[in-house]
Image 1 (tube, rainbow, N blue to C red):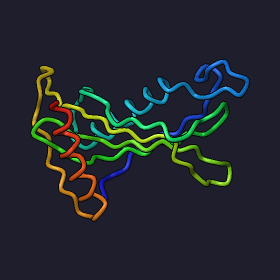
Image 2: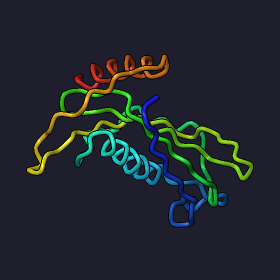
Image 3: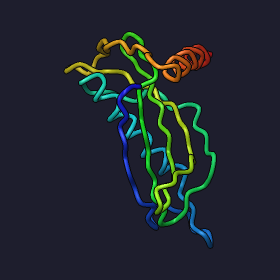
Image 4: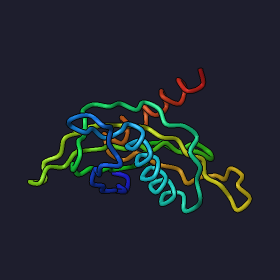
Length: 146
């Protein structure tokens, strides 16, 4: 399994809408996704990266004020200068149980010291799950060309 980068946040009032039972803004979780995804990409490539796109962003369940959000990011595919990272976001209960609330795939490009695309190390899927994710990443890559 590829290395996992984890981020943990508590949903605070400034992260929520103004409803009677405040929910986490979708844009806030998107920002957290981009950060943890970029950290995973930087760790993998050992260089600066920039976001190309975030696609297949699925809001599966809500998160509310005072929830603990745990995000796990892992590389799923690499090209010549780009790589895809999957970010799973969970609400974690006080007993440690987790509920998946969001899944997203982000694409980053590695940058050299002149902010030009730079080749990335190859990601070689080893487990069955990594092989499935890699194959799905290739399909997403083709879909992004449209």
